[in-house]
Length: 224
Image (cartoon, rainbow, N blue to C red; front, side):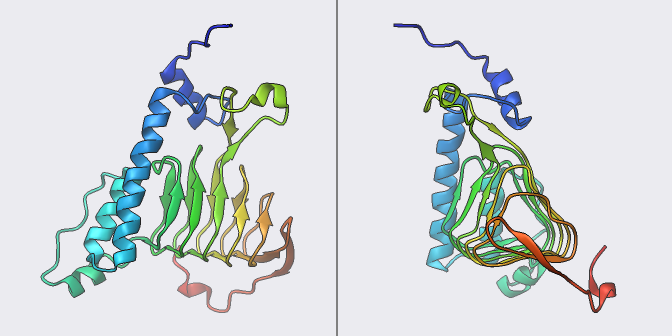
């Protein structure tokens, strides 16, 4: 039997983050995914219970995505604290993620339940974006050649996903690797976004296609 391939773990991780072919089932990345599952369980449990303060949920989310940016000091009451933290993302559980550290949500983002984030590469979501239930964002890819793909022993890759400010995703949307979605885009329920989308349009379908432009009635209300 042929011996296992020796893999430089630091180089393998660099390749993953760069969107190059890498191996996922290696000790350090497997440990990362286990750690993320524990953090996801803690976060989803807290959301489902509905008994945590806004600050606790923000802290659990920061732990999940490994964001060490200090929070503002607590306000006098929970109600005042919730106002203080209102621009931090609101994310309903349950959630599925691989790593967490490759997901970045902008200010005042809302994500409904049952979202999936295959964050092999960076997934960025712009401010004030609303994401409906059962939406999935897949930055991971696999070779189409099955002899290279080779189950869990073969390499996989990835491409980043970038979503602009002020977007709205209906339920059950899917965004594929390497896609950039512009500002102010509406993605119709059930759509599969396979290629880049320009600013201020509505896209619908599988694959998603532009059906109309969005006329912004009060552009002065949109933050720059």
